Image (cartoon, rainbow, N blue to C red):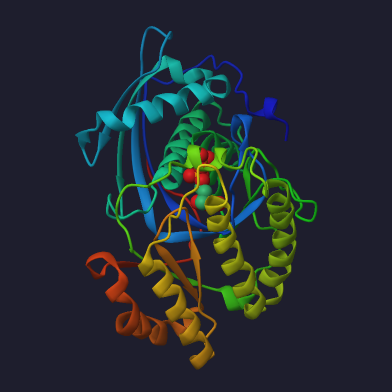
Length: 362
Ligand code: DP6
């Protein structure tokens, strides 16, 4: 679908008021998005598992106003005004303005909260932008009742991408691909698509336990991080590698080969960090405890033969990925060997989910 198809024609009948509420989950990338071009176009395709428990719940009240020059909104976090979140939302609204002209005709009150602790090192931009985009699409759906479900979800993902790239993978489906890939039907740089293949039962309810190694603010913002790939000496090879890893992972998700899954996922995580270490300026986002945990996971896997592996985001926290059938042993292993490396012994148990869900529609 070309970009122009996402421009909503002016609506003649605007409703006076609408209230919606959506939850949208976080996601964990298996093949990483790292590097982007103008207008939030990814430098390489990526794929993620959608999470289930780490989510943002956002309610929006839209009230029609008489003027339509500027955006007008209030932002509440857990029911209280939150001024420092406003510039990010303002920028998002400016980016999506061409596609949602009707927004300037409404004053809206956005009330948002996360199910995970605010200072946990877990980014809320993916779930937050996804939840807000779903609410906007709910309004657009009321203004344009003939809209198909496919268009509804696709445009929601398109809008979310303009807020934060990885947010487009938090809309719909257990595994989501974002970015053009020759072997993935329907894949696009403009929005995320549900992984089109059959996912092998080995990945049913796959677990992700997030070990909170460092709960502080991100050391490198995602914008700065992605920009590090411009002029990076290894950029072109990295982008090719992501295409090739996605081809391999596509087969693995279908055939259930957990050994290959581990190899691809861990290599992707370490490559992401290698890119940061090899950029100018350079960063080390892992902490000593991140490395301790990785080594403990490797030893445990060797001794137990349980297919547990790790992945990382652009930070020190470790996502421990494993099949549901090994949950008891892995949680025991985490208790016995890994909690000591987590800040205040904290970790979050999550698993594969299905995407955003509607909570309220008035
Ligand atoms: C390392 O989606 O946060 O988590 O588009 O600038 O908002 P922006 O970046 P963002 O980048 C996420 C990078 C990553 C890898 C991934 O999720 O694919």
